[in-house]
Image (tube, rainbow, N blue to C red):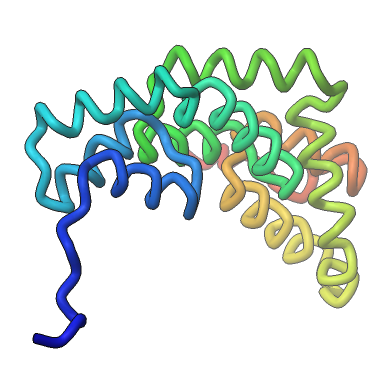
Length: 171
């Protein structure tokens, strides 16, 4: 009989294998174990055991992810959505943001400004002032910055934006 057949792994072996690939939230690990064919009860027991051994720590993983995504230039809305989709609790996400704010002096405006500075060469290629600012606004929106933060960053980066984005008073 060939050795190509895999021996069934225990839930703990599977959990450790999954966690060596990437850190994940408690809920994400539980879902992955269930997807691998383990019962919800076995998955929950395994996740609890992983927590007891310190293999899982939602707080530390969320803090690291917030710092990483902020360094990449992502805004708070995008980061929060990403973490929620990965199974982190709202309180854990909020605590991770508070921790990041304590550990660094950066705020949303400074992160947006850094992103705009990095993208400056692409703005410089656009001769039309309005199209240049519109492109910058799209970039900020795609990175998860709120409209208020985006417009403030544009104002600081390009100067006064009021005349470039007029209000529609026709209605």
